[in-house]
Image (cartoon, rainbow, N blue to C red):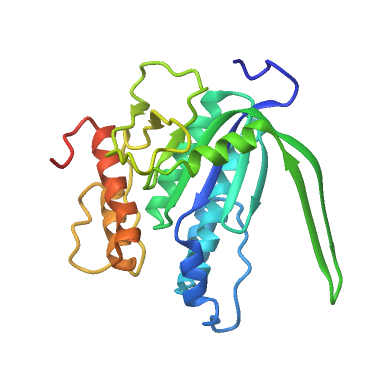
Length: 269
């Protein structure tokens, strides 16, 4: 189905930050010195400059998530004029053209991982209908309203939470895909007791090109092999810092396995 098949039809990208609830429960009461900062997301360079001044895990990850998404939405404004809604630990971004949605998703995923912010995405075709966006704030009352809906909104959300683990860009089966290497077949171990909520068969390959430079954060441990692949290094660092619980570590394990498949390398036997 083409993006112009019906009024309001789009390619919708849903982005969900992983592990945010646990992070809030751990660090919300530990207020940074001077309170939580206001970040301004004019560009990735500006974001990175501001991130150097915070070591608070919750503040750092929250600012990174919204800053990376905002920077890439700004970059796409002239190419596709996407519609977007970001809130808390998630975002919906609706594009007119599939290629722009794919490029956006790949760039956002890579920039989030490089900054040690795990996320998973779902991409689906369908409608995106923004009805009303408003805000009203006084000294005592704050009211924010984001009214939107659509079949693409529902489908993209369902794909992201289909049951597959890891930092992945999952593609809805209704998308028209080619045999290009950017579309990687899903090969996760199946569990008959937990079938996928949506029959997702492909994911978007975000590991086929390398970053021209390697960016590391001040809290990365000394002695780590920073000459290695930046995506793999960052995922390994995130896994080390995350709780040593099976339900948490499986996210990183599935991510590493998926990246091996994206690069055409054999996974664990």
